[in-house]
Length: 276
Image 1 (cartoon, rainbow, N blue to C red):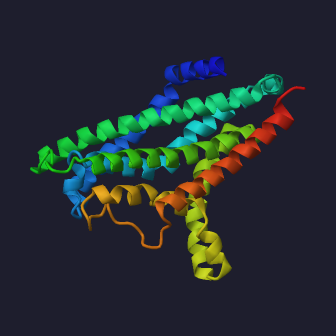
Image 2: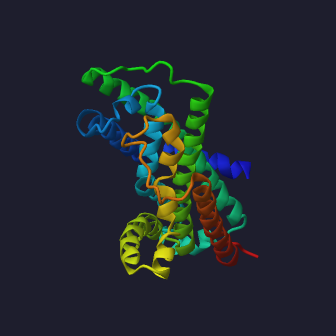
Image 3: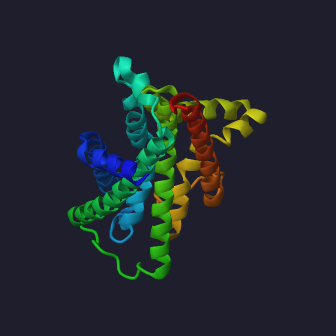
């Protein structure tokens, strides 16, 4: 297993695709800080200054998760099935389960590193925005044991949300042996959930109950709910839909969804890819 993970880590560190995804994510993060700090405001200026900039960056990172991490997960799992006429030969080899899950483990570790970069770049962006807008760069009296705990919990929550979308796309790409399907399911399902949620809410009744259990309901505001205790009360970044589920319920629901995706993936790999 260690050898497989070492090989996957080597691929992750050498390929350009993860770097491009991270660069695009950080670019949108900087633009979000700039837009929120200079135009949209809404009382969020103190939230963009250090040390609260870390929480703001993680909220934005969680918001962008459905549109970036499915690309990494889907393309990573699906690309090995796109090698033309030899795809079945390459897929039907021993230790396929170890290979599949070692790759997934490395990708999840890579997401964690990317979120560290999000926090660092968010802090830099918040500092630059504060300097350009004439606001305080660092707010004293904010850092405390409770605040540090909030940052840690928000980081883990943002990572869990990103992991959900990566696992969703990775599982779809592995099951259907296609990078395009993995990416399409990962991103398309989120867009479809927003549309269906609006339709089901209008229908009411049991349809409304179904819509309330869509994954996007659990992933949409969970990072904000965790971070809100460390942000300015009443600001845009700290606002949470009152009907949204609690952070604990959201994490549990996303964990159940991920367990289902991984179980189906393992069943597909064992029955189709692993040789006797």
